[in-house]
Image (cartoon, rainbow, N blue to C red; front, side):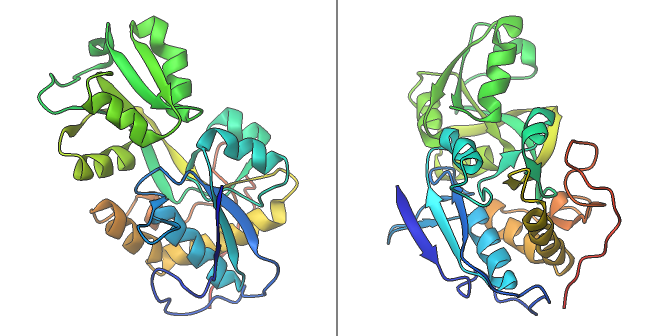
Length: 281
């Protein structure tokens, strides 16, 4: 496992101001799937880079703390969090009701929706009915893996699981699978790097929050991190970071620009609806 001790002062962007929560403390311990571009992926000079790395470096910097980021397979991240190895997960985790019943989530910093990527030249997927008889590639242990398991029989497709998302993309490019299913940001980024991959059909009803999970006994840290994220939304940092990594300016009502009420994801277990104003300096 590759470990980076990232000095929080080395933020991706200079901050206009330092919030009042800069209290110090031990390094925050977290982890990403280091093959999940553009959220986290290897740097040529070593270590990892990406949207989520930059995002949580800045969170730690504004909290006055260092942050230790591990790079590991996604399927092992939640068990490691629950075992106490990490304080939270910096990897993008789709918030579902089932997950929210076992973990605490901060509010979403991005919206995600499921999207297929296909090999250039293949017939587009115009509806879920077009999946019948096809092979779909997914990242093992992800929400896309769970969706494939739940819908394969009903929709008549088969699926293959891979330890990393790039491996799932390569399965499509090499014609071992017809389509890869992943988040919209990941599919678009992969297509920008791999000319033989084309973003295709998106499952609109799957829109959900991408957010950081915490153990259920760590509400204080969840609330502290969320406060910092809300300040980063209010001063435009999250939106600028999104444009840098995904190539598009977020809409005014996208999660990058939205401070959600209470703490957590509204309407799901673990949400604290008590009103609060983010404490920013």
